[in-house]
Image (cartoon, rainbow, N blue to C red; front, side, top):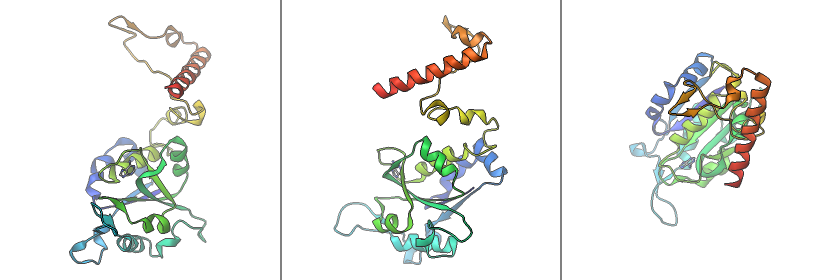
Length: 234
Ligand code: ADE
């Protein structure tokens, strides 16, 4: 899988790249690259944004700046990027924006099965709408609140996608049966416990110490369902 992140702040991803599952994914041949919109803007002073037509506060990412950056990276007219390709490849061009489709396990799964992802991070007041209309296959939000930019959202998305890739975690079962996965019918994960078996009088459910794997499994699925029901009624 190849993930290209378009951003004004590529350095923001330094910490992210030190994460073990990210390093594992990169070592397994997956690719993570950064493109700085400023590197290809031809506007004087390397400008990337402008004031909104119609007035209002803040600055808006310019459509021409995004076009230049995408074109320089891919060597094609960027309106074709998300479309069908002769080589059968598939790319999703994703704008990180607070009003987009909420990122959940189902979307993460879809994206983890897409070989090429382009993540567009906005800053300031957001994107000129024509960027979203003409270059993007998706608009994705990590929640109904506004961040100062798309970088944290891109990291959240890339984190969730990369840990789904084979070899990223080093123990594959943990991705198959985790919170919100199909294996748990989309419910939250069951509770976990580890040593000590008792601490300040707080004990661990006896079933988990029983060594009876079938019963443990049944108990875990039950707990997951219960939590799912609780979350739904909250
Ligand atoms: N950019 C700013 N806020 C965002 C959010 N909540 N989700 C995705 N991208 C964003």
